[in-house]
Amino acid sequence: MQYREFGSTGVKVSRLGFGAMRLPRNEKKAVEVLRRAIELGVNYIDTAPGYLDGDSEKFVGRAIRDCRDKVILATKNPIKDASGENWLRRLDASLKRMGVDYIDFYHMWSISWQVYREKIDQPRGPLWAAEKALKDGLIKYLCFSFHDKPENMIKIIDTGHFSTVLCQYNLLDRANEEAMAYAKAKGLGVAVMGPVGGGRLAQSSQEIAKLIPSGVQSTPEAALRFVLSNPNVDIALSGMSTIEMVEENVKVAAGEVHLTAQEREQIIQITERNKKLLELYCTGCKYCLPCPREVNIPRNFELLNYHRVWGLTDYAREQYKGLADHEKASNCISCHQCESKCPQRLPIAKKLAEAVQVLG
Image (spheres, rainbow, N blue to C red):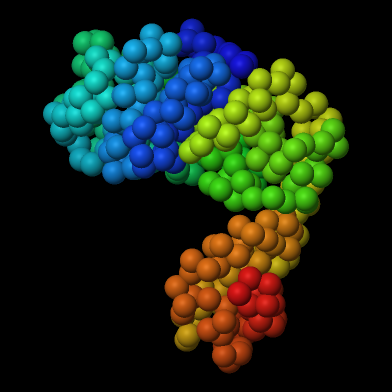
């Protein structure tokens, strides 16, 4: 396993982190998967009180009970209100669920700039409570996880209150790339979630696999190697539910060189070209909505593009199957009302028929 210092904290973390959101629901199996990861050198485990309806924190606590000193523990606090006392109560509940005395990296969970201003940085609010928890040794470092606009990540970083950031980043979603570089330059540790695109890149795709000339065994390997090759990424969190997943990901993360600079640049150029190609098919502007039949036109086109551009056909079909019947392309009656509203003048009815044929 490769390790690196997590920002300016001085803590050495494994490049592969364990995202405990997708653990098996069975406690025995969950603990076995976690213990195998620890055995193979994964020392950073990330959970949250809402994962698996609270069972994730319990399972993590069971798994690390006799090896707490080997594990760097991260969890989160949902910012439900501006009360610091309530924030501390939620912290106490997590400590008790996991059976630990302290949490290493404690996150303000999924915050935005608006939430920071209106709920966190308030008199006797969560920020006050976090400073108290730091002083009392209940948490070692205050962090935040993030799903807002990249420019707002920079604003939160500039408050100076946080030691690390956890954000979305993968081969198909590089929106946070510049903000991550900014975080790194400011001394924050950078952990990323969704390195395999929330499951999109877990599916087999020859189009993605061939992006790496030196060759890969699977699409997830290509995705993980891309994320770990970014010098601003300290930890790639992977949601692993089986020992086989753990062993495969550890094997990838153990490599010293994940991509050469030339390979990485080539991948970025190809993905940028594909992004422009996607926009030719549909920009997602939603001017075509509402559809009188309630067909979710942009979502159908997005799934069609996963098939057409990235070769993620199995993923696209699974997602199409999960749409409500009225949202599916098959509900289109070719009334063509949407086409007059489309800025690109796309033949929407024809493309929806293609979606039915490919995905339905």
